[in-house]
Each structure stands twice: as structure tokens, then as C-alpha cells.
Image (tube, rainbow, N blue to C red; front, side, top):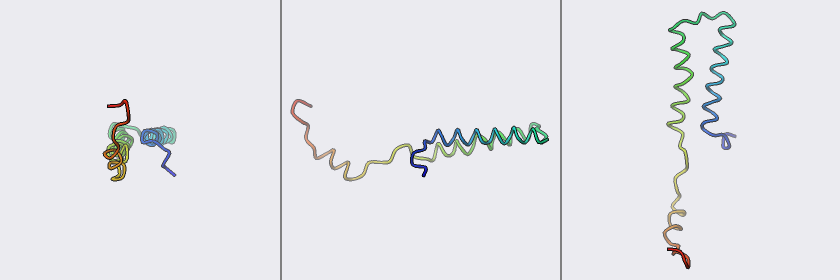
Length: 79
């Protein structure tokens, strides 16, 4: 299901959802002071940052791909 979703898309969705929740909580009467602002900032930025660092960007080459690249000699006219 998530094979066609990019890392950046998931991270931006997380940040947008946290911002929407923060705005809704302010409208519902939540007291927004400096300690809660730090908590919202951490909750908004840390999970996407960890996800971007941990999620691999590209799969490694398989053994078959490596052997195919080594066994093929250069074509005529190419060096």
C-alpha cells in the first residue's frame, strides 16, 4: 500500500496533521504556553526526521545485478 508513497510525502503529511491538531486544540481552548509549544515542536519534527534518516532511499543491488554488470563486455564503439 505504501510502495508508491515517497518519504517526503509521508513526512509532510505528518507535519501537516500535527499542525492541524495544534490549531484545533487552540480553538478548543487549550492553553498554549512555551512548554507546550516545545512539546508540539518536538512531536511535529522528531518522528519525520527519524523516519527520513532510517528509511532507505534505494534498495541495494542484488548479486545477480552485480554479476551481470561485471560479465558483460563493453559493446563495439564503447570504451
